Figure 1 (cartoon, rainbow over the protein chains, first blue to last red):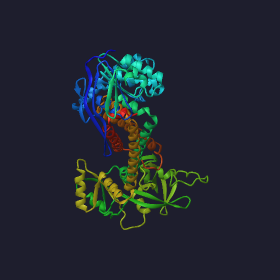
Figure 2 (cartoon, chains in turn cyan, orange; figure 1 turned 30 degrees about the horizontal axis):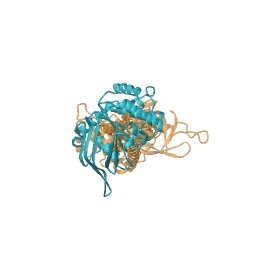
Figure 3 (cartoon, rainbow over the protein chains, first blue to last red; figure 1 turned 135 degrees about the vertical axis):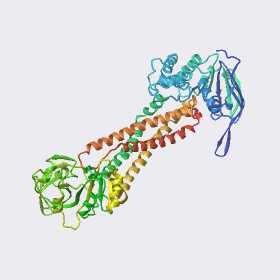
Figure 4 (tube, one colour; figure 1 turned 45 degrees about the vertical axis):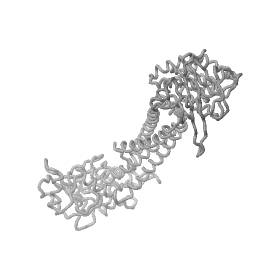
Length: 236
Length: 386
């Protein structure tokens, strides 16, 4: 998929510090980053370098201290909390490292959550969820609880949940780190095939160098800064 | 989101049952103990209820409750009859006398003497014989509980249940002969002593000789008379105390509430039930929320508002509260039903349902509030922590 030049995310001078019992820890020390529509951008770097903080700011679930971070031209920092919630509900899909599926809900019910949050009736939401589950190859496992699914299948359910409401930005936090190589590879194939779209951007935070090849661009972070942004893993 | 809230709640069966059991226990204690309390208190005035015909009870002004007999002179009866608006006024004797048992022991009985002519003030339900049989020589009517339990003949089998008194059996009251001519159903009294009805004159013959023996004057107002006004007139004219049916019951209940340890004993039980129930349900519900905090975080990250999450928690609290309350109240009702023929005092008025319902609601609000606070303060960024 060829990335468009339109920016999905544009961060300029984003600073974020955490107060850890009197000490200030700089998590983001002035981040400048642009993620384009139709692009799969990976954020890589050692633990504690600020990757998770950066996607939290991009996804609008954490406020930066200063700087601006526009998502589809909207500066989430200046939005009221209700507007930010609606924006997030409509435009952002999440895939988590630990899947974060609700254990008492079956696959269809888990996938339908974003639609229900967006005000779609349960019956219709579950109908659409079943369709997306088919797209990710789990059409027959809709009634299964997360505990009845393998790790790879759970991550597929999580991907379906991130896609079901057609968000324009999908944020993935270590989507393959809990999976073996082959399953991780399959999950990335699926993400690229199903999730990547010319009017959608994917941001993936990862340590897993085996999946760097799926990225359109890779931003390497260290100590709260972006060292470099490259278009292939070999250039890192 | 209601569906999701309920599935989250019931997904962990152990926790769910723990919360429901906590609330059931609280609801049971908060209903059952007050039901016994109300049952005991209602026994204090059961004699007034059983004597339903008169509008006004006239007595010595120093009387504090129904069993606190301060005898009056017989002439009082005529003074009361002379008050304008009195339809009829009848004497009533009420006293504790000893009945000699078949095995030689003595049993204290509540002897009630009814006006010889009218027999007003008799037992509410006759099971055997007729009230008029009291006119037979030495006739007495015994309440069925007393006849079956405390006044029964000793069993022929060692250790067996006593044989109930029957019509025709002979009692000995204060060394005088009394023949059982009827059995009646009365409400158990606070002291649970057998109740023996007889005529006023015969009751006086059983009672130890005293200058004054009239316990109460029972008064019926003339048709159209205002009862409180008539009571006031009787008080003013005779200098005696005159209470309506309800006022006399209130006087009796208030005496027991103020002068006995019953309210404090039951109050402690009910308060403990409330505190233990609140602690169990509150803590389990709070732990349940804590364990689901990440799930709430996921919902929050995906755009669910605090208000949505608050509604989910409230729904969960309302559901466990309703089930716990229903089970607790149901168990209390079953308990009452199982104990209906025993000596246990138990009364379950609708006000108790409201009382325990309010208690369980408070517990649920408390449990929900501490959980809601945690969820509202929750940072959705928690979802990115592995």
